[in-house]
Image (cartoon, rainbow, N blue to C red; front, top):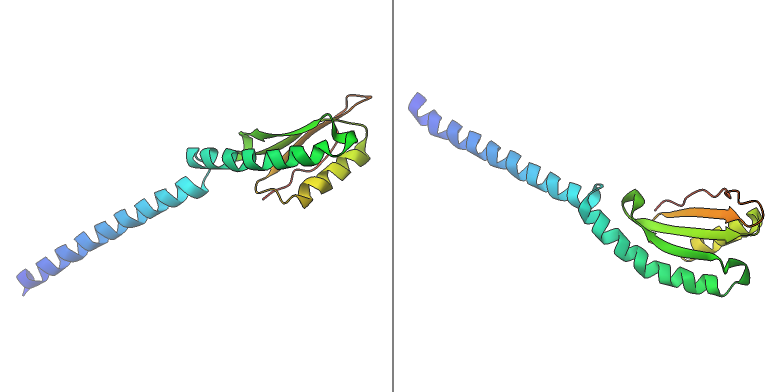
Length: 128
């Protein structure tokens, strides 16, 4: 009787090993696409490149944003950076609302300076 149960227990152990291996492979693939990895660093800048052209076209329609541009940024796993010089905090808030209305596909980081004082204008980054 013990000889009959040995093949069953060996096949169960083999099945459990394959199951664990499959779970580890699925976990690794999920981490590649959803974790902070090179795959995400490769996909997100493509999205940023596509959306930055749209943002820069929008900015060109406003004279107060002539020194502002959107660029692709590799920080944060790939995102959009809006950088440049503005007159005041009101313009920065207006710019932020315009960017939000464009529905960016990625996180947006702002690096905006005030023209007169060269101080950094405060804007909270938009998460996606």
